[in-house]
Length: 170
Image (cartoon, rainbow, N blue to C red):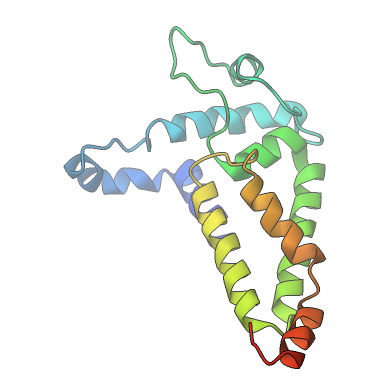
């Protein structure tokens, strides 16, 4: 998670993708990552106006108005195209801190669980989600929320005891 956020900072803040332009060109892609860097820069520029509590849930037209996109002259962006920026954009610093706290508690519970196989599976799912979330906004996908709910509410130690009593192992 920290590595992905660090990569986002490098791309938006330092535009490191420009150093790889020949590679992008070879594959027929542009260095804006399909205009994502343009969208990210506009989203970041709009953050100071609602930094503490964010803009809330916005529809496509509200999003374009807030970040300053025009359907006629700009790319057709209707969301931040990054899960991390979407959390900050819609909930502000307060919501982002709460979100990070939930994630921290979930990973802490996974770390201390005695069911290692469940730990590996759930951790792999969360890491996969966070890598994908770098390049698009998956706030509305239920997969992430189901995964966090399982991590938060499932008693791994109880599961391990039941499995050991029945002689099958997870």
